[in-house]
Image (cartoon, rainbow, N blue to C red; front, side, top):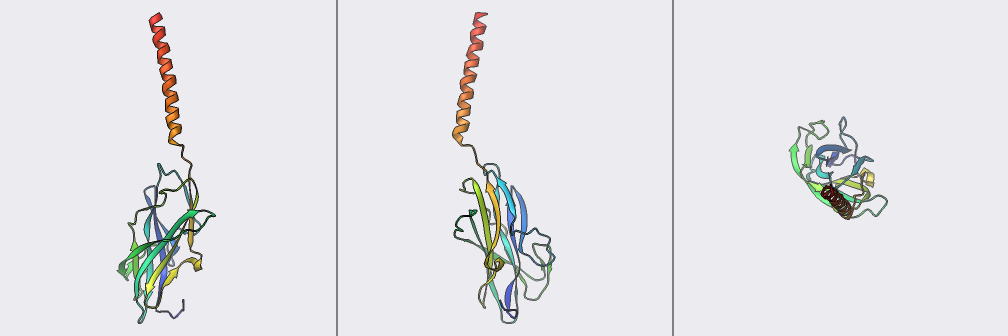
Length: 200
């Protein structure tokens, strides 16, 4: 993007929810932001029966000068096995949220003329749904649509990538089998006690 461009993105954040706790990660955050970096983060190991990993949305901070105009912003994400094919991206629209002055998701005061905030915080996308046990990447980037063409925050084309894993879950048949064994041995023990009581 030219240094003389009339439009662009200057700060982006990702909103996740891990086990009910919302966390804001910086993608390419504004200077002075207090958020942890998403790039290269290990989000943890998840048991999908009792744990959750939810994508709530993102924030893009944009600027416009002169005749430039920003008309929208979007988050794109994909989840795929680590080391496997990347997979297709899903688009999440970011709604217009504010003209400057405002405070961005990193706690930075934004006051430049033409600066705008675009965000979605309630996408509520279950990132663990239908995934088998294993290691996964969550890959994201941000796009702003302008009258001068699209602008991107995408780590120079490599995108922003975090990782997580899903634990193996014992099959239901294992629990059923254990229950049957318990019931059989429990019944045998009860019958022995009853026979001893009758013979006493």
